[in-house]
Length: 402
Image 1: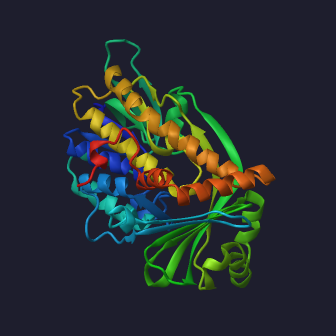
Image 2: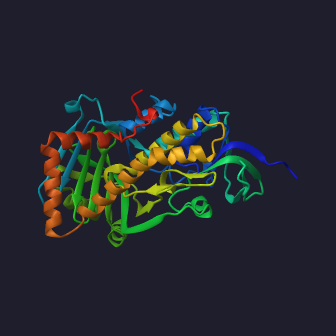
Image 3: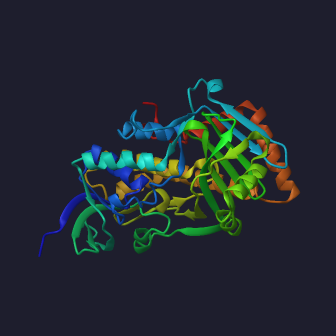
């Protein structure tokens, strides 16, 4: 019988969060392994699709510190953020220059960032990939003094590690097998994404429009195109997925209001169900959850990817001092470091998702007043800018300016 493979840290899931974490931990000197079910050559990794990601300034800093962000990665800087509301008052426009900044963040296509991550993984000798492969079972030694997790893969390969990281998404099998408690709420909404030509072709402005049916975002792409994130009830999104291009563009024109015109050339559509997953204590014995496996949030205000990347930065920072990365003291420090940001982001996105789709008059007035207040009061506007850039306390060292 072959001896088990030995790694300091094993990551279940090779999507955005898992791959970024592997690069960072290997850079900190750990022997890291990734278990990923989707063959890298299959072009089917769900994290690396055609979605348009808003990567805020803190996340850009994290990617730069980890050596993932380079000049070859295509991205569009966001210098303005425009937030409006349909059928009501309230309008906020944020300009980076007014706050002494060059940009708030950037727009990146998930596939482009994924390709860059795969390049980093392939070049790093401190990272082993088991791919395509599936984690079948794992067991943590019951001895309090033991420091090993025993993993068996679907192929029969056996692995021993000191820490198992769940980066396997909202339905995380690792989280469930470890008995880590979480709650799941279905918004009964879905997001439809596609790209489209539009006028005016603003290349550095991100737009978010709140409608009674759900938010609608326009994210700048090259050559006058925008990535569209269209959120509505799951039933209506199913209908919209079946629209012909003409019907789709007509409905988009209705929802977009007066800010855009002359929509044309819609690209391929995809849809995603929207759920809220909350894991208040995302650790078990020698197991820790990050990214969507820990907290999956509504895409309103584009917080999900950025929250997951802050998990990555937080775990790298905590484990940088650890001889035994799965020891309880380091797991407790990680929970303490991340709990405020995770709770605040979940609460913020959930409140926005519910408030702006509430049809009652008091809520409509309240949300309109809220937008107006953020537009007029400098203190609230500064808080909105800080939040938009991802600098939530405590700010990780990796998230600070390079």
